[in-house]
Image (cartoon, rainbow, N blue to C red; front, side, top):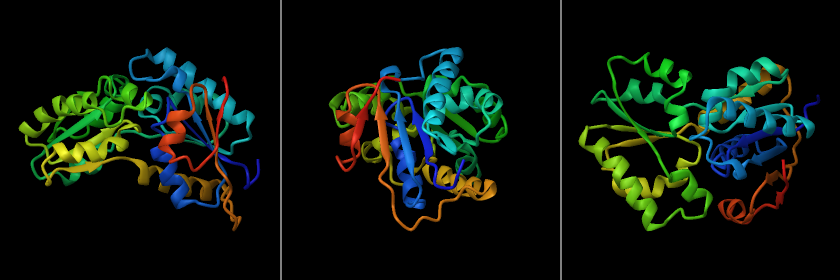
Length: 259
């Protein structure tokens, strides 16, 4: 393994590009490989065993492509499989989980909302984290249908607006002052969410925190790339590449490959 090996990033689909964007912005000289397992999205409705198996499949592909560190840019995969990945592979992993801690610490109303997948909200890791904040009321909402609409390219559809309104209105009525986005797909919904939420409600996602952690871990293990030239990122998807290309504003080549 060398410093100029790529960082691997995987998600159940295109949503993890919100995490990749933050990493690429903070570490523009690092080579990156992004893997979108869109054929199997969403992970949130699958069993833990299925999520672990899919995560290992993705990791195997990234290791075959010589990645030096892997970012699990999927809340569901992190909360259900990160322990198994760290046990079974000798490579640094960085996970992503809902940012409950900053929301709970900063909440004035002591009521926060979390919009996430069923797989994340039912996971042991999420529930252990939530239990740390007994003084804060956490309004949990499964975002049924949101990931599939994003994966299908229906980001701004009337159906999306209707779903978001039905999920967020009870949180508004419960007096939340922070909304935690517990799925890497959901940052792409922030423009629609802001139209629904009152202005005083803050939205938190995990992209910047994951990017900072990636930078810190690379330094710790001595794998930071000091190359002054930016490298062209590589994107793989195992379904129609059109939506991934669109979410990347057609700036990068996307390789369709079965894995």
